[in-house]
Amino acid sequence: MKRMNKPTKLSRGDKIATVSLSWGGPSVFPHRYQAGVQQLKDEFDLQVVEMPNTLKDAIWLAHNPKARADDLMQAFADPSIKGVFATIGGEDSIRLLPFIDLDIIKNNPKIFLGYSDTTISHLVCYKAGLVSFYGPSIMAEFAENGGMFPYMVNSLRQTLFSSGAIGEIKPSADGWTVERLDWAKPSNQQIKRKLNPSTGWKFLQGTGVHRGHLVGGCIEVFDWARGTEIFPEDWQDAILFLETSEEAPPPDMVTRTLRIFASMGILRQLSGILFGRPGGDVPLEKFEEYDKAIQQVVKHEEGLTNLPIITNMDFGHTSPMFVIPYGVQAEIDCDNKRFSILENAVTN
Image 1: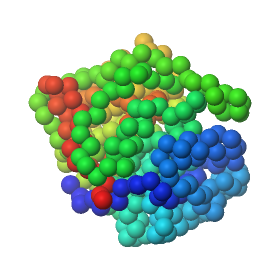
Image 2: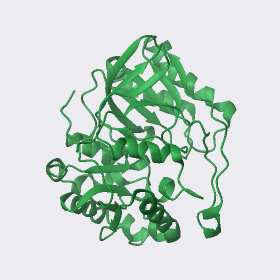
Image 3: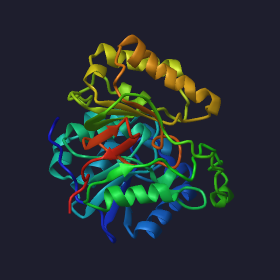
């Protein structure tokens, strides 16, 4: 396992920067962005600052990946900024790679938070040896309709604001949702989304206790990085976490991607696999097809019958979510059906 640098924990009054590394969502739905900023301030008492291009027009940002990368570099280089939060995801942050300076990230460790297309920036941080955090974005989870979910708030406090060991992560007891309320209607901001009942997580296979470092992301975006300099190399005993986007890629896509990872020799080195609940408009009765797609490769094709697999977990493109720190040691206890993060992800 590679040596990882842990950033300093967040405290009340700290300054965090918001960055638009992919889609320029804040310019399209400014009220939604401002709702996220305000709820973040109210709950965590943080100061929020925008980088020079965070609020720029979405079309302009689409044509200027260097400007987006410059914002990320400036945020990391600024000693007054303690954390960098993605405004939203998108689909083209991989275009930032030619303009990234890994040394700036390596020499200025701080909290980096986001998910979905932000997977690319997480892999950049991972390459630089920095623990980063797969978790909420400003416009989605921080701007949650009618207030943020307590499950997510508690996870953020436990992971980013405390230097103690994170410990056992449990399923959301309050349920989950993928309901879409049109962001173009500001009045929707006050309407809480409907929750599906909590069904817990599914421990598909495996026995005993397995430990390893966490690495992964949105499965589509993660695979886009394959062949680039930021694709992970240290797979021995890793716990791979993956989830599907709001575009709801079919189970066959999951099967094909896992076959690629199998052919690369990745699956046989793993200590476990975590899968988030399917994102997008996937009927409940179809969830099992994703489980079968995973097991088709892992169990039936590769014969890895004791490799732990947990599915329907609370991270990724369903809400609420818990926060996953890259490169930190975690544990899957198959017999007692527990998942824990064994160490701290931030320092004092």
